Length: 456
Ligand SMILES: Cc1cc2nc3c(=O)[nH]c(=O)nc-3n(C[C@H](O)[C@H](O)[C@H](O)COP(=O)(O)OP(=O)(O)OC[C@H]3O[C@@H](n4cnc5c(N)ncnc54)[C@H](O)[C@@H]3O)c2cc1C
Image 1 (cartoon, protein in one colour):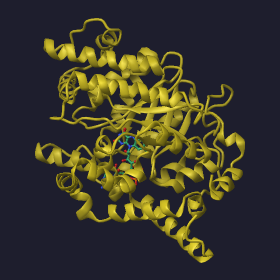
Image 2 (cartoon, helix red, strand yellow; image 1 turned 90 degrees about the horizontal axis):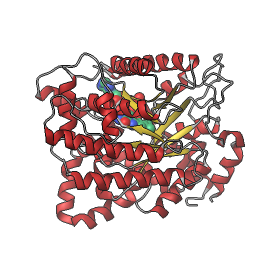
Image 3 (tube, helix red, strand yellow; image 1 turned 135 degrees about the horizontal axis):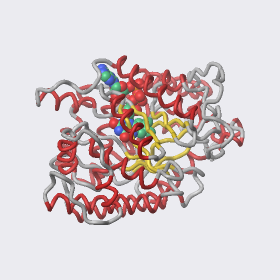
Image 4 (cartoon, protein in one colour; image 1 turned 30 degrees about the horizontal axis):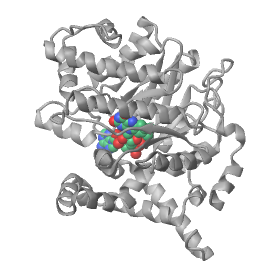
């Protein structure tokens, strides 16, 4: 372990590294405490990084700030793949964006990355970045293989001592075709109330007939539900499964399936969570609807609250189809929506902390700062950032004793490519966070140069 790591560890009181298991006596927020100022200005957070890591992060963020490169990422990658071949492209990306945003491919690489994170008081939240969009459907065999990868993710998440309250992310479109999700979403538009019964029967492996789907589609839906059920059964009481939100043209279907899973598995605890994207004008309505269904059907709810990662594509798609933009008109409106939804959840948590949980999944300092008064050991509220992004926020929060998860994707360069492209594009839109991170990285580099020890 580097000198920097051990110094940082000494600063972390042991209780800060403890589990986020709910304490029955304390409400999540309790009386709001004054957390005092937390500035996220301290470049010391980066002392734990090697000089190579600092330089790599600066180079990646520099690359991400060139719109011409980022906007044409997809094209550049396919040209590079054509010229260099898969192996050549992999060799090119591995030490660069891949190393910045992905934990590795083999269990050994992932394990090293996780151990380092745990040493810093951060909790890894593993993610298998397998996903499909329309026109990319790969067939039943591939979905079965994806299920095996997810089960491996469950095993990796709970069989190691990285954290005592593990979480993992799951993308439904890795197990169920996007085409079917789009069709289900279209069918749901004509329904006035949510009926979870058909999906519950599917999760239990019984034959189903979802109104509006043909025989082949019903058969595929049943296979998908069985796969999801297998993963949920493997993870319940061990690993909390956070279902990702994807595109608006399939999210209602993903939410319906997730709610059915919540109804089945969230009776004695919050094991299945859903994600709400606050950049959507309708996010408050979606969240409120889920909360209403959960009250009516009597299950607990876990929420991953995000701003949303697909803004460019959502807007392009809306324009192409000549329909209103589903995304808020400005970043400020998205912020307002995020903070409003967070308030709603915090009020519910303060009333019933066993029934509701939230992960404030953002790099935005203002959003984070608003909730610094939460009960750190209550377990109902935690924070989340992505691997390779805004470590100054994650490390400062962890140092102050908050439960902080880092979303940690892993897999081959080929499998993580869509994820990497999204991260590159997002770093163009993640506004002050990355700018501040770049400044702090530079400050730390200058400090080392002044000390005359360029490398460690
Ligand atoms: C743990 C974790 C899990 C995640 N899971 C998901 C997921 O399941 N699904 C998903 O979609 N995303 C997910 N994300 C990504 C997330 O949605 C954001 O893209 C990312 O975190 C950046 O938002 P921010 O709040 O951190 O940053 P900020 O810098 O505060 O805001 C940037 C975000 O604001 C929005 N925005 C920017 N400009 C505008 C504008 N002009 N008008 C309207 N809105 C604007 C966009 O959403 C943009 O990503 C996850 C993030 C984390 C940390």
